[in-house]
Amino acid sequence: MDDLFGESDTEMSLDSVSSEDANLTLVKTLIKYVVILLLGYCSASAGVVSSQFSEVLNKCMTYVSMPVLLFSTIAVLDLSAVNYKVLFVILISRSFVFLVALVTPKLLLAFRNNALAGGMFAILATQGNDFAFGAPIIKMLFPSSMSEEVDYSAYCFLAAPIQLALLNPIAMLILAWGAAIEQGATLHWKVMLAILREIACNPAVFTVFLGLAWNYFFGPQLPGVVSPVLSLVGGTFTPLALFLMGSTCVSSLANLQARELTYPMLLAFYKVVMLPVCARLLAQLLLASEDEAGGEGAEGQHADFLDFSYIFGSLPTAVGVPQALAYHYNAPEVCAEVSVLWLRAASAMRFRRAGHIRALPAR
Image 1: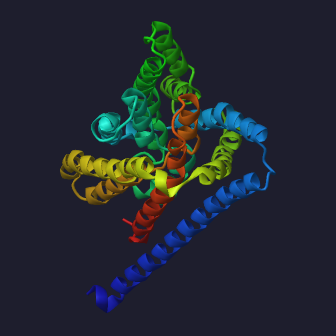
Image 2: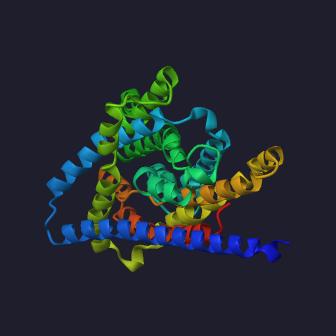
């Protein structure tokens, strides 16, 4: 009967138009981000952007635009719509890969200081560029209209304490222990206090909890006068971060050599393959019960969560993270080169997966 009245053909044509619009949006977004990355890379290569200027931009991004973006996002979030199973998936999958990367230098590689190498491997294998790279891409791939739950991009901000307040501090303690071994000393309690103080003063961690406190006491809304200002300031974070990411790639590409790719390729495997696959498998196990309870319409949400878990797990690390580790802990230069390798690999795999997701008919 549907064919007699032409309803089936109409639905197919609407799905086709929706798919074409989605793919066009994806292409436009990717082009925009690539242009900003190339602009940062070309500016640094031509000497237009100095290291001092990059440092100023980085401080502005770290202490102004990023905290404002985090606070304004968490403060207006409907916490009752948050699926905490998704956060549990992120916690378990990252913790598993964290432990695997932590013991890798001891079991597989020949390092003089296994504690120092293990701490660096653990951070590099799990730290993701969740805010600048992840949130905009995920927001575009999973618009809130596709689900009755909270906007998926919000999980990029809600998951920040998992990495910054739980996994990274453990790795930092191990790094401090490795540095003490390197100097023939013992790990002093003052070092532990300094690490705890650094965690408490971390702008990302502090503003996430500040946003949660505001949300709890005042509800998921901001004053009408303040909201536009916060939106304007927070909106500068993504372009600033992408520009700095492109400019930082210059020094990494200059040092990249094929003979030194063993460790970066192993780390890239953990970040690009192991972490997203673990997250997707765990999501499939945990969300199976949600499908049964959800009844009709749960299948689409299940697929969305599976795709989100995979893409979120494959987010590359910010370029500055491995370079900072290489600088502060006298690491081999190859630790800085890993950022370029998995930035390419993770982006290629994520965008391939993203193209598949957006090519599907709207659920």
